Length: 321
Ligand SMILES: [Zn+2]
Image (cartoon, rainbow, N blue to C red; front, side, top):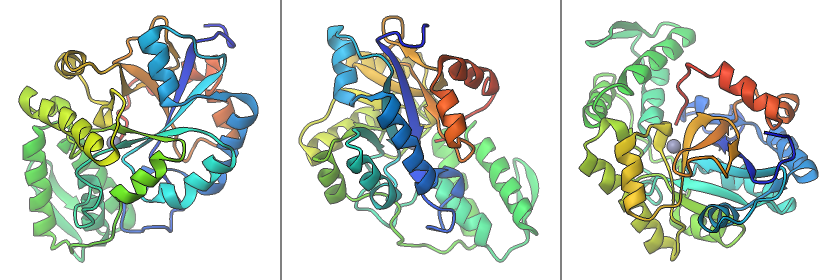
């Protein structure tokens, strides 16, 4: 893939843009970058790349039009509140379009938190110094490092099991460790999302409750996928036929559901750049931005060689969320 070939699309995945001290009740592992580094990333894109909108990408896929050389699509998963606080003003100042993938059961429901944030809040702040979790054994919570390790172990286990069972396990752990409920809002409201949709931000479906689709029945997966599209249509008034798989998990069933319902593009956590002439548009690759992505690393990852290094580096790693 020559470096400056047209129709090669780099798709960046951000989750939260925040400082570690912000929203201390939320899982800090969802922080992709801090606002200052995010600004550097965006300035680099504005100076050296062609940032395209999701509409441009859909048109290129559906009609075969070509994207310009050095095309980049900026995406944010999960619609965290931090975006309005830290990312939007930077995007607006540079006039860069972006996309937010929204799990549509969460806006306007401040009492409802993502399961990984509930796990974090419970295990990071409980007064208990350990507990027994039958499938894994005893989990120590004596030190912050042990708490982080226990959170990682539980999350890894939950991602492998039937999603409904996993959510029951989350409820059980929260109850066992006397987790405090919170009404701290973590996701943008529908009013805020409507406002963003008028400012070069495109909204896309990301299921309703953010389940691991491959750990659900086909029927439940279909309800989650099409339901989120209907919610966006109802709340925003229009929506593109695109979808983002939670945690990147997808299989032949989920892709078939999208195909049957006229979706033209879907986003995974598979790593790499996309040559739109060759790519499967329902399994598009993305590059996940993490706090390790300094400006220097960011610049490298946008290059062809950087994409190959990413593929090699992340060959066995599961990405979130
Ligand atoms: Zn997500």
